Amino acid sequence: MTETRANYVNGEWVSSESGETIDVENPANPSEIVARYQQSNAADAADAVDAAVEAQDDWATTPGPKRGRILREAGTILQERKDELTDSLVAEEGKARPEAAGEVQRAIDIFHYFAVKAADLGGTTKSPSGRQKNLYIRQEPVGVAALITPWNYPVAIPVWKLAPALAAGNTVVLKPASQAPGVVLDVAEALDEAGLPDGVFNVVTGPGSEVGSEFIENEGTDAVSFTGSSHVGEMVYEQATDAGKRVQTELGGKNPTLVTDSADPAEAAQIVANGGFGTTGQSCTGCSRAIVHEDVYDDFVAALVDRAESIDVGPGNDHEMGPQASESELKGTLDYIEIAQDEGATLVAGGGQPEGEAVEEGYFVEPTVFTDVESDMRIAQEEVFGPVVGVLKVSDFEEGLSVANDVPYGLSASIVTDDHTEANRFIDEAEAGVVKVNEKTTGLELHVPFGGFKRSSSETWREQGDAGLDFYTIEKTVYDN
Ligand code: NAD
Image 1 (tube, protein in one colour):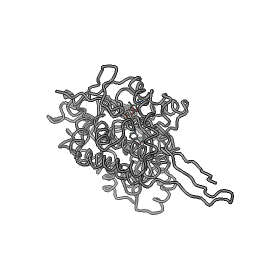
Image 2 (cartoon, helix red, strand yellow):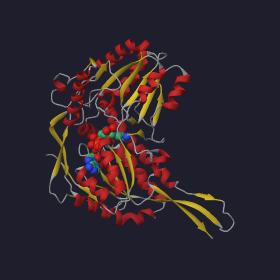
Image 3 (cartoon, protein in one colour):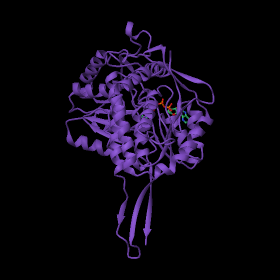
Image 4 (cartoon, protein in one colour):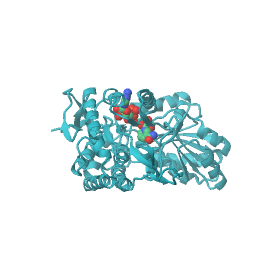
């Protein structure tokens, strides 16, 4: 029988007032319903905010090292359950197993990282100017943080917001994406078992327009951290700003890899394939544009096509590339494949759904490559969010740099080159929050800041590392005489 999972509010497992549930299907086999979740409404969301408000003062005054111990213990519990969480990610989101296991490990590592940070939170002491005996700056929690997260990293993204928020003494209400909410409820279980006091962390599943919107509008929340599409994120930003909330939005990308004439075309193709086809192309930092010098273009395209055609697509447990996460994501990708052809791009690999017994049922799509892509085409400007790479030909480094920057997004950008001067120019001039040399656009370390330029991010705040704590803290300057 399919399990129905409850919301986690004020330390209790509770059903929605709506009495309705959401089915989550396995994208590799949609007739299988993996689990049911609460189809919550604004009243459920408001209850969660009330619990978080009630718990705020006690949590804020709990000593940092004690908060840290709870985070560390939760990470340890999750480590013991890593296989179960990985199963859940593969079943709900469709990720290939090694990628799913890597994501779960990342969430565990983030808990351990912020456990140390919680213990080490401090302010700074300044020299008094003469009148006062002590002049210092304290870091205080912002209050109640509302977190709204996407489906493509269903555990890593919620945890990279949650762990710093809790470490800094905030209480949290979280609305995960409806496509894969299971792992966030597993995290709530682990925190509960680790001794997190009631009300400090609350999870409510349901539609963004109801639950997310209530979190943003409710007077009890102080900060909103959102990750998702630019379209929704920009509305959320406005709504939260109007409601007087501190707000952070981490949004879409159209990430380039620039391949210069000094690059080894085969190595460059491997880097682009890893960035473009990894996680079925469903990463905000995924490479969707290869901008290639004309001298290495033909060899690069041949190597990229070879790699695309060699990828084994099928259910994530035993194949290299899993399905798209939902029917609408698959449709979105297939629509863009059609649009690219209508615009005049040349399809050189993939372009449809694979055939075979293993892939008969699910939302699978072939790794796809287009050549003859021009920078003003929609396929080169808009986020596809599937395993589709467009190759653009350029005649020199200057043109390549300008094409790389010629999009409304600026999340991640990489260059493949043997020329140090070009690499340095790219580092200086690429309009992206993350710049990489001779590396794929995807993949981030947990101890360095992450965020984008232009439409990819609200720019004011960064996530992860020390910068990840800034959003959840507010400084107070104390003159103590
Ligand atoms: P989405 O914008 O559709 O949804 C994100 C979250 O917002 C979900 O929980 C959704 O339910 C909620 N939501 C929807 N409407 C809302 C509303 N009116 N008010 C409040 N909340 C609302 O995004 P998605 O499809 O889940 O995720 C994919 C997108 O996320 C891609 O564009 C990807 O690039 C982006 N992304 C960005 C980053 C980053 O760090 N920059 C990381 C991962 C994903």
